[in-house]
Amino acid sequence: MTKTFLCTSVLAFAAPLAAQITIAEPAGGRIELKEAGKPALVYNFDSQLKEGAPEDRRSCCYIFPVYTPAGVSMLDDFPRDHYHHHGVFWAWPVVETPSGKYDLWMYKGVQHRFEKWISKGMQKKTAQLVAANGWYAGDKKLMAEEVQVKLFPAEGKSRRFEVTLKLEAVSEPVTIRGSQERGKSYGGFSARFAPREGTALNSAEGPVAKDEDLVNHKWAELTAAYGGKKATLRITPSEKNPGVPYQWCLRNYGFVGASFPGRTETVQGFTLEKGKPLVLSFVVTVTDPE
Image (cartoon, rainbow, N blue to C red):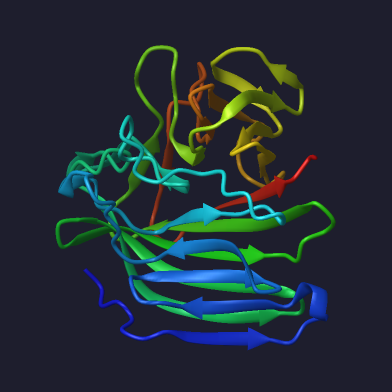
């Protein structure tokens, strides 16, 4: 486990007053981004465990919570029905190497681990965090993971942030696959939602009336009311990502996931090799529609 910060420091960066963004580093392995003094999101870089959750569900390297410009918090962390769901997160149920098979979705034999910060600061009006992580099977590092989080100033009732993942096998090839359950292929970039009312799933191709798997969409979103306040979170994969448009796992219980590499007659997995990194980028947009 990495050493967490024992004190609080704040880095403030001058931008136009209405869009001033600050980066705070409280104790507990968390980085908090605020806009105009109000929380926007938290990146959990070190190991986290919610009270009451099993020890083997301990996790790191994900984004939670996330707030709309009006301050609505939409996401859940360590929900009791799926302790392995964490706000905005990325994981795969099947991680295969020539020497072993693992499950990063359920933390069976492999886990994310924070290594170091590459950079933290501002670029023009955006806050940017870049972390070096690894996928570890015990002491063996399988995959190098570089995570870049960019937070953009709010525009009216919406705010967006971009997450870019750079993955590279360390010593031997690593194949990632989605769920191998029949009719499913979840695994990739996902969001888990908090308890709410009036859930509505939607996509670039129109409303999604019921739970859905293996259907391609350019983007997908969930709208609902949280404590009477309506909010929407949308995930949009970059058009530069391999394999787009993606298949999705969409659930009315509160889950939206872009499935990569998905499952078709010709695609059953994606193999990474040393020296040939995979780059995946996603934009997350949160909106106060009313």
